[in-house]
Image (cartoon, rainbow, N blue to C red; front, side):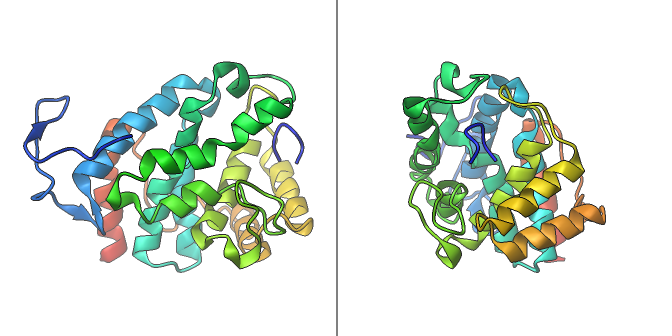
Length: 252
């Protein structure tokens, strides 16, 4: 439920990062199929920008990353998909960087033009991340996490299984987290009330019923914190270590 009721280029080999460390893409280790140097550079800069700009969403991306992995693990998704959910949790709203504060932080209902601007953020986020080849698996997740099962979502009006699976997973945890935390236009709901709303949206035909039902069951059983026993690293600076720990647990 929303308030209206319903070019980064990859670092070149031999270039120093902001800490003065030499970056070599060719020799860099990988996490699944994601080169560490590219992922690290994008996640560090964009996660910090998003977290520092909006106090209402502080920690949102991090919580989403781990909750999405937990739900994906419960669905027995493969390790590459779990890694995509993890990275996608951090980058799904990166397109909001281009939204004016007057729209992003408006305490009331958005008007038609403001809503058009807000609805453009999935496409903008995809455009920001597209130059990074290593993030190719993440692009559909970024673009389509606001689609609805019945085809009334945005930006492309996809319906049913035409919506990428990982986007369907992420949107369920995204909705729950948005409902249970305050926003400029609403107070935080209790966990129970948020689950009721998620169930209502599923019954209305907006969400993948199977995924929503599983998430609700996991929340009610207090199992969604982390079936992989992964504790989130609180600081974006520790994201690389967190990703490496995740890869270790997924592959052993």
